Image 1 (tube, rainbow, N blue to C red):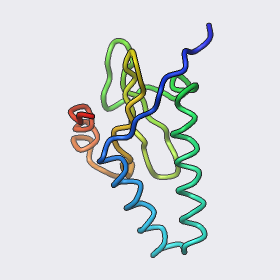
Image 2 (image 1 turned 30 degrees about the vertical axis):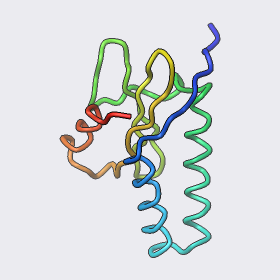
Image 3 (image 1 turned 90 degrees about the horizontal axis):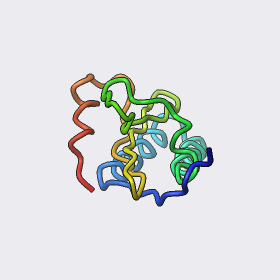
Image 4 (image 1 turned 90 degrees about the vertical axis):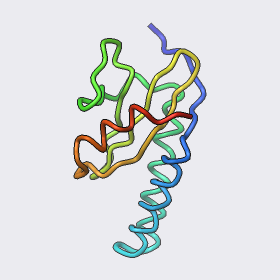
Amino acid sequence: METQERPVILSILAEIDIQNIYLYGCETFGKNASETFKAEVIFMIRALKNLYELHPECRFIPTKNRTYRNIIFGSYLIIYRITPSRIEVLKAISSRMSISKIRAARHIKI
């Protein structure tokens, strides 16, 4: 069965998270490494338009229809929601965050 292409929308919080990850990376690993990391994150997010079913269900936000999924990238989880009309990228969270903060992504409105 072929996956239906859907537009990918980022929440304001996801955009802020990605920028903060980039800034942290610049300070910690240098600008080149941080730019490469950010480019890979953006590439993976853009690929969700066709590959949203590829990634596993977010185990911290289980649903019957596996609506909430996550991309595991380095030490980060990129949490997204599959809706009938689009893919909503909700947060980019360090995997070291508390489970309650990860679960809070469920309540993000776009």
